[in-house]
Image 1 (cartoon, rainbow, N blue to C red):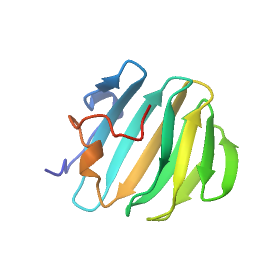
Image 2 (image 1 turned 90 degrees about the vertical axis):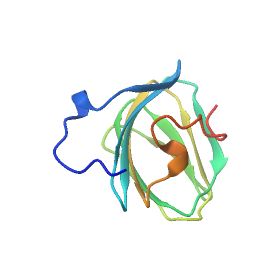
Image 3 (image 1 turned 30 degrees about the vertical axis):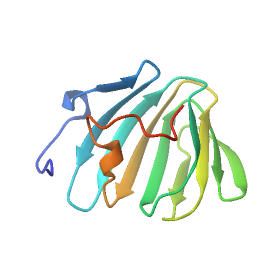
Image 4 (image 1 turned 180 degrees about the horizontal axis):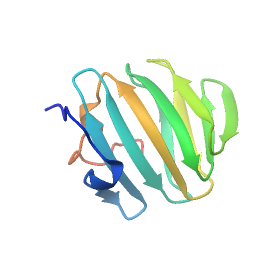
Length: 119
């Protein structure tokens, strides 16, 4: 169900998905935002999905692969991932980032099990 209205990040419920991964979600009809904290060493294994995704690194560092290109993404860096493109990320430091997805991904919704590609 969409979370229409005004929100504050600090008041969105924190979901401790694992001991190394927490997130806060805000979900609309056509998009979702996830604020995430991941500890160094967390790996989002190679995967793709039909959803367009935008990632904005707030702190820390991600070693990110988009298609065949690799980069270390640091605070202020952004990645725009077209639907269907293979990608992966490794947290090389404790990292905070915001991810926007369109349309929303049910497998990342609050309360959903840890996706298979997160280790």
